[in-house]
Structures are given as C-alpha cells and as structure tokens.
Image 1 (cartoon, rainbow over the protein chains, first blue to last red):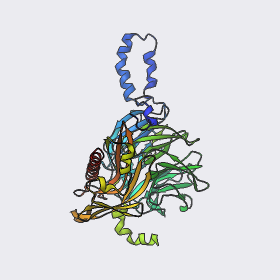
Image 2: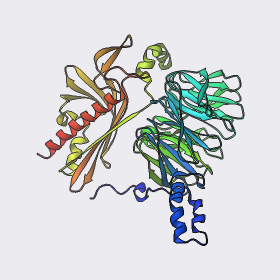
Image 3: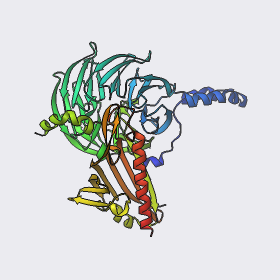
Image 4: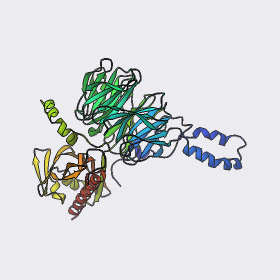
Length: 351
Length: 183
C-alpha cells in the first residue's frame, strides 16, 4: 500500500496507561510470593483499570459528539488513557470542583454528564433545559452555569443536588460562556443576537449587553480578567471587551469560520481555532493583530492549554484527533486519535 | 448599509438562515477505483463536471470560476461555491450557497420549507489518494440538519434524514464514478 504517509498519531499506540500506577508498590513489596500476587491480582487489575485515584499526570477530556463518548488523553505520555462511554452527543465541557469533576453537556439528550475524574466514569446525569451547550463552573462551589441554545437562557445548576436552581434569560442562541471570578460575572456569547450578555452572579441579572461581531460563539477571559475575547464565526474576527468599562475595545481579524479561543498564561497570545482553514491563529494581544498561523487537523473546534501552559491543545472535529502544540515553538509535537465529531467546547484539561 | 439591511431582514431570516441545531453532522463515503490517481482527479477535481459522473445531476452551469448551479431536473437546483482546489493534494472543497425549495410541510401549526437536500451550512470535501495500484476517492460532508429549531423535528428534516440523504447521494455518485472510470 503506497497511500499517504503515516500521520503522527498512527505511530502512537493507544492503550490504557497512567491510572492506578502508584498502586503497584504493594504488589511488588517484600515477601511477594506467587500466592500473594495471585491473591491480590484481581484487586489490582480492578484498581488499575477503573480508578483514577492516583493519576499523577495532567489529562485532557475530549467530547466526541458523534461517537457518544469521551476520550481521555494523558498529557504526560501523550496517549489515549481511557474512553468513557456517555449518553448521546457530549459537546460542551467544563472542569469543576477543583478538577475533581468534569461536566459535559449534551444538547440532544438535554442533559449534563457529570464525570468523576477519580474514577473516570459518569457518576450522574442531570436533565437541563432544551439544548444545553456552553458550560462553566464556579470555582470552589458545586454550581455549573449552562447556556441553553434553544431556551435563550443560562441555567444555574446545583451539581450535588442534581437540580436546576435558576433560569437567567439572555440573548438568542447562547453558545459559549465564561466565568469571571474576580468580578463575579458571567459573559455569555449569543450567536444569533450578535452580542454578549454580562450577568452579575449575585443578583443573577443581565447588567449589560455588548454588541460584538457577526455570530459570536466561543468566549474566553484574559488571565488578569481585564479583557474578554469573543470569537465571531461569520465575521471571521475576535471582539475584545474591556471588562472595567464593559465596552468593545477592538476587533481583530482571524481565519475563516473561527470557533473558539484561549489566552496563554502570560496573557500575551490569544489562540483561535479556524474551522474552515484547519488552522489556529496566533494573535498578539497587545498589538491587536494576528501574527502567525499554525496548521492543525481538519475542522478544529475546542481549544485549551495544558495546566502548566506549556502545551496548546486543539480538538479537530473533522478527523477526530487532538493536536498538541508546544507554546514556545508553536510547533505540533503530537497528534492523537480520538473519536468521531470531537468537539470539547470549553475548558477540558485538568492537572 | 449592510448592517441596516441585516437588521431589517433580521427577524425573518434569523431563524431561517443563520441559526442551526447544536449538533453538526458528518458523513464520509469512499470508494477504491481501478484507475490512476491522475485520471480520477481529472474527473473529480473538475468543479464544473459533477453532472458527467453523478447520475442525479442533469447539468452544471458555471458563474465565473467558483460558482456552479447544479440542475437535478423538475426545476430543482443547488448553487455551490468552490472554496479550495488543491491539485497537489488532490482536494476539492466547496459549500452550498443556496437550494431551491421542493415543498412545504406543516408541523406544530407552522409551515416549513423543504429544500433539495435536507441540510444546512453544508461544506464538502472530495479527495483522491493512491490506494495500491488504484485510487481511493473520499467524499466527506459536514452539515447541520434542515430543521433549525429544537426537537422533535418535522418529517424529513431531522439529523438522520440529513445523514441518510447525504450518504446515499455520495454512494450513488461514487459507484457511478467507479463504473465510468473502470470501463
């Protein structure tokens, strides 16, 4: 077969690694007779395959919207660590409860899938609205904020009680949302009303609507909380909102049909996925300008950083893969196979 | 001016043109053909020639180099725009700009227009690669279902209607392409 050259991920073996490894010492301890090993083996296997209790490595959770599961990628070994079966169409994602929990949204199942990162399995399913999509969690609280595409609202969900507590009306077809813990606000991108709703968390009221570009979808906050970046799908641009003045301060051109964005830890660069160009735009935030473009896989959507900020993680919907890019060199260092329709719309990497 | 027009038409077109369901669909069909990559690409890579190998297309009318209008008979038309043609990678990428309306369906007390293909925001990629001594032609589509509001969906406008139809269209085209090129 002389077809196309092997992709990077073809060289990566996919098998479970990483979890439960620290449980191995008891098995290898002294007076480790065959009898001992045999007696403990079944338990060890269960621990090794089911538990994430001792996972030492950072992980990325990739929602595969068309294969109804989540690929868990070990960001140290750069391998697929586990595939978690969920209900239908997991799409949006958020890290919650100090990364003890990952929550995925399913617009088709009208549910949230609560995933315990210790066990790597779905611990609960919570019914929410008509089309939950974007999600963000309150740090240190068991609260998730969920944008509902059809209900034109943000739902406030109590994770522990598995119940919707409040409904906050926003603009039309809300997609991405980001939490500002300093100012205690939520910024919600309304795709079909071309604006961002600013919600005050204590009063649960929209305090301002800021008009942005055409069809805002993904949204992210700078590390210092001073700026919000909103990705406009149809105008191929990013709108910048000053969070002190709550006013539009810039609009930056990026690639075609952009989707989502993330700011590096230094606050210098903004990375934007361009769906129709199979690329990521690198924007110099101070200069308000795109400075370079990185080729990634087909139809990139979700984007996040590894917890230490050294790797940029790009989820390629079109081909079902994760591109791992070095944030210093801006070169792709790994490409790992995931599932079908990989999306991970939100924050999906945990320490 | 553009903004003003958009605002005037906004309420009407908001749900009919801009919005889409939250779950984008994907269909991939491929076929191995006993012919050289060059010969396969000469046919597949010609944006104005779909009617020469797809049985459902009667004719293609070009508007400039990058817009084609496909006629399917009985007045049915699909207008498509070429996004990229890469002769080196042997890749053709295009999207649907417009389609004619076939009929309307009543659902939940409202009328909904059904178009030639039950899809929205549709882009497609055709590629040719070597496979053994022959060629592999891959046809991939990315789109949303026809019905733009929340489920349940009217007859013929759901996710499965969209994926089943596109899959059938691709298969029919690829099988005919194979028989033509292997003649």
